[in-house]
Length: 258
Ligand SMILES: Nc1ncnc2c1ncn2[C@@H]1O[C@H](COP(=O)(O)OP(=O)(O)OP(=O)(O)O)[C@@H](O)[C@H]1O
Ligand SMILES: [Mg+2]
Image (cartoon, rainbow, N blue to C red):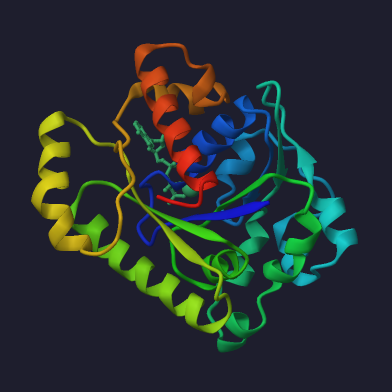
């Protein structure tokens, strides 16, 4: 089982799209995949059309037992054979768990529940757009972290903060955590990509590796979202292009390299 957190300080950069893109790629390969929606906005939960059961991610954080986890897991209605995607759904009440307290870091709850996810090959955690207690919970329970950004100055600043947070969690509660790399999403043109890959990226991110190819901005991503389907089922040129990128990313994650 590989557990991957997808995070960013800045909102709207594509965390949920990345989680769903990777989940779709994993499902096509027949992997048993779990999406944990740790964002109180619940976008992944709605997009996967998971029918919330009696419990969700908030109950698991409150009470990280096998019984709670089993009550909270729900199948999603994506039809991408041969694999399967389940969801640990979000609920607006998850926001209560995002307040920062020193204790939250020292006693991570999701990490305690991790053993009960053991039947899955891949667990993807969608984080809220913050580096509060929920993102820390996600990082404390993960093997790998992916930081998502768009090609912009403020996006880059957010990346630096997220990378620092990952370092902090590695030093304190999760020595096994590694940064898988930075995902640059919504790249509009070859020129923009070129500029980023040559000088800006090297200046801003330094030692941190960037996953390539970068993810292009394509209408297909919004079509997937609008129709509640994985990008892998959007058969336009843009859909295929984006799906191919996620397939490459999945290879790297599974190989433990970025
Ligand atoms: N590569 C892309 N091309 C076109 N549109 C995209 C792309 N990636 C994401 N989007 C669109 O951008 C919007 C924001 O994406 P998404 O919800 O994945 O971001 P997020 O980081 O999860 O946001 P939040 O911080 O609110 O959780 C969505 O409407 C999505 O369809
Ligand atoms: Mg999101």
